[in-house]
Length: 86
Image (cartoon, rainbow, N blue to C red; front, side, top):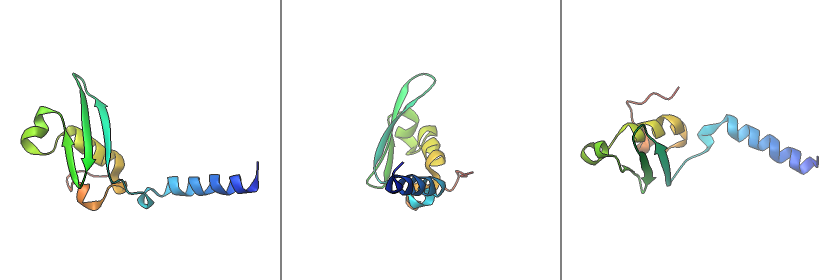
């Protein structure tokens, strides 16, 4: 393996071990729920989800799941204080 490639692989491993280096800005995911698929997004500093619960509360299990999964990779304002990140 070329030495420059080895260096890139090592740097990738370092970044993967330190997720706090990564910050998500905008993204959309599909969460396959028990009954339906749900489109959950974070864009322009706001969460959205197409589930009925989100429509009345501006949060839901889908947005909370994404906060838990992404943890420190989300901007601070996108994280819920109620969600513990293990």
